[in-house]
Image (cartoon, rainbow, N blue to C red; front, side, top):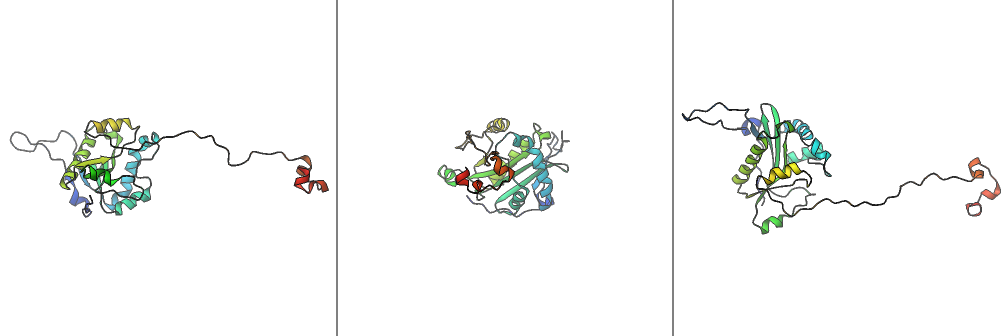
Length: 227
């Protein structure tokens, strides 16, 4: 399942533009809307992408138990250094409108994915670790282009499935993926049960008057005798 990672490219080397359609005479027709470009993320993009992800997942995180990845800025920077991970930026002009992060094998020490599940079923997955679209560009074809790019990336690497995780209560995302032939695999579901708790600290307690006044009567010297 492991695949060697492509060397990181500069923005100018990795930029891909959506080809403009051609008219009947074979000439490029004027595009009906803005062009969306895809390129590999570079180190200088880390700050801008991090800010983009915070905006993209703000509403989702308010409704889910687990924060959508990346969980911290430090972890996000560490991911950039890891092998076997692709980080793609989708831009319109100079504005980031989508981000995709994928890997060719199960990565991370805290990952619960079982590689044998896929091996037994002859599935060679491209693991989509992150897919984010700017809220202002929902419903404008950006997500479809991102998914098309991921399908293309899987094909050129000889992989036959895209595998991703969606929060169980993220109904909009679940419906979007199901329309695009995604099916649910075996999955863990977060569950919660109420537990009756007790305070860590004891409540205030009244002392007897002699101790409270600081009296030094002999009868008060021994807790076993006075209490």
